[in-house]
Image (cartoon, rainbow, N blue to C red):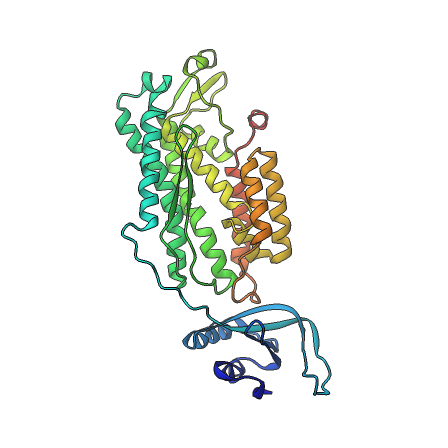
Length: 383
């Protein structure tokens, strides 16, 4: 059967057979791949990682998953067609050729970072520090703006740094963060993102890279929220209109940090400091990222822990939640892109997620609930 392969693919059969017992294989000429149906193996993960290392030296890659396998014997052969409903299938393909990188005098990530810092600083100095509250209670608007900018950029930057460090730990290539400037007076930044430039090798790796960002960013967000709450001002409810406070739906975790500083009391209104507003954005970003939908961080966690179909169901459930919370643009965005690129598939999709990570997935869902902006009517019911 090896005579149907040529070139680099002629080396694939003995290479795969050195790690696994091959039950059948076939070449897909149109896709330029070779599929192998292999026997079950108790230490599949370690063998597959070793196979990836060998294939990488030949500029090739492998994908493993449980799926239906149907052989396609040549017309001149009288062999019986082999069909397996749930077999371990390894597909070997050539790595795509890397395009030559264009030289940029000003790299895009650096330009976007500078633009986002400028927008956030402008928002802090000319919007947040010019309110009736700011004019009465803020003594040094420039200093507060600097703290506001550092707080918000720190939340976003540490979030992305968490992803980058986890990716580097597993040898996954990732870009520098792409910060997204927002609209002064509304939302000064729409967050940040990194581009993963190589395949996630396993479900465990996909999970670890996905959860590292939200956890790192949330730690900073909690610290910023405690400080921002401590410099905010409680005023009697009947005087609230004088300061024109902007009303936001707050998360349960944010309310907890405010309670730690004694800034949750009946018949009073908390006039939010700019730094506390930065924390509000941080909790919102954490909530959105931890939704078990599409290719959001939470979507990667759901895909790793539960597989394809539950991930798809949770994506639609997340879209419904976003509609209920009136985040209509985000809901439509997730729905649209989930139909075009529904998931991120690790190379080893056979080895299940570890038990410890499955428990951590439940914790992540709980954190998403705690960071969700809860409608004020529900919050009053809880309090």
